[in-house]
Image 1 (spheres, one colour):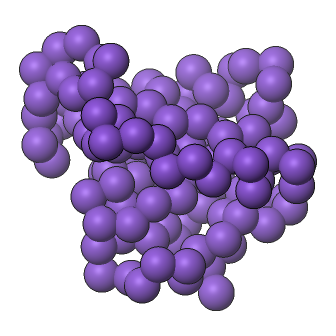
Image 2 (cartoon, helix red, strand yellow; image 1 turned 180 degrees about the vertical axis):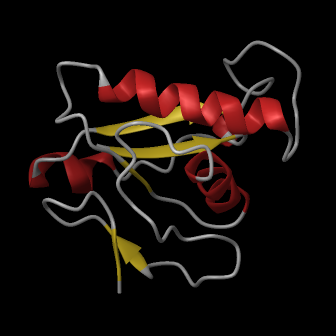
Length: 119
């Protein structure tokens, strides 16, 4: 399962599910707390933002439509939210190298058995 945790849903989803789903991956998008369809107060880089990312990954890992393993895919702000989520060690998060703001687009890609694998 590939997750993007972002405050930018008002701009539209990135639309890459058509690429990943046929390859056997589930694709999910979640709004950062206080943005889009998420309730609460926006917490740019704060503990609520981190904790919500943790909770989203753990919720996804319990769903029947996943293997219980997930990775995050994004760059820029969306990349920082995956790092913030990763430091909380949610059950089911398998990637240890996500595409943050300091990595070029495409330096991480999902691979079978490893959720995400950095090139």
